[in-house]
Image (cartoon, rainbow, N blue to C red; front, side, top):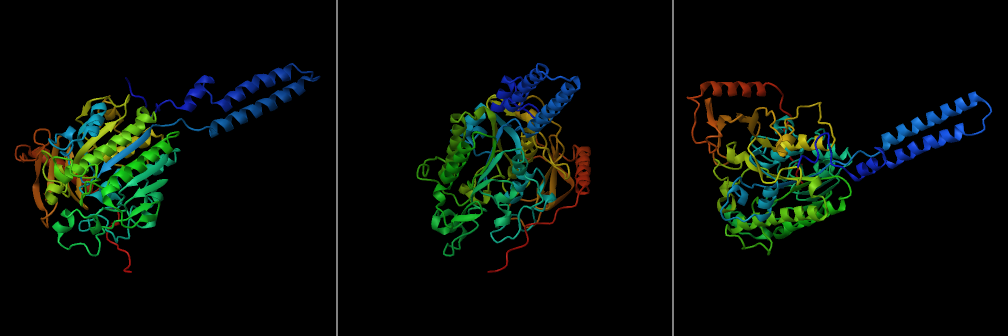
Length: 521
């Protein structure tokens, strides 16, 4: 079966079918088509005594008819585009799902999603930690361009005054202009003050946590890190739940957060099934501290981390089942991914990057290559595996075009249209891919080659190691980045160093949004 829709071929909507039944016009235009011959018959079949009177009447009738046709044509609703759902896990590793090779974490719903859709083997987040990663997803731009990164304060803190700049164009803003309903459920982490929350960036509705679930410990929580994080006590934490821009629960029970998010997400789908919608569902887990509901607590052979991931898998199943039951499955593109790699410093609570090196916080593959699963029956070929590289920024460009929006031309957009990859109908021209840690360019990839100019573990090493010439890895042969082949391929390393230099010189970084804090209360 061919693709059900594309940038210039949206799926047939109810209005499309009505237009087809009326000879290509919507019902109002069809009424005008009927009125023209009726008016002419009345005019020429009448008893006017002067020919010039008939001519004047004819001209008036035609002027009225053409003006009315133009009015109705301009006011007719645009054909409905596909729905979009992005499900974003927090700190989920490349190796944490059954369909990506985990031997004990059971993820039947995500496995089915991959079996019915497409699994990417080289899908990337645009940053190694969550604030810049999320900014890139929603704007299609490297965070260095809009200041959503910093070398010391790597994410927005609970007292940060900054947030995603108001002049950034987000995916929900573009889709909303095309008539889409837009909803955000889950972790935001792009600014917690009212002026920075999702309703200020194109979302009609929001329900979730403004930042990471560990960012507001209770005053009486243990000071010892391990006791606080591994104690699994909800009373240690008080990150609030927000609806719209108002706090609705200052100290929610994190055991049921995944269920609450799921209920809100599926309700959003049901409430907006009659039109086109975009749902951004950003889970708070498996970021630590880990909490699972009673239905999943103690169930996984992989311990508490497995419990949490298996509940996320259940949540994905609920979303996909809702789309199936409402008859929306074949007109909805769903993408599942993660904001960055696993947080390895939390040991058994930190997940796995599989065969990839390092994890969250680093620009090695384990820090930024993440699971990527795409699903849309009839459009995305079932059981397909995509080996071409793609990234979260590409969703911005691809979904904007599919939704009928124009990609902003007044600023650099780093995501590209990957619709040919999603439909397995061709390849795309991929520009060099840049790996940033904060404001510093650590590495660049072009084709299978990756050059590291700076390397640093995600955590625990204060300063990076510099490499001149850069370390060089062939990711097709060596995805674990074990064998530096710069000596054998000096020209490739030299070319990539030139690419990096040209990139650095091509723009001025945006002023950082991560330094300023709220005034002390």
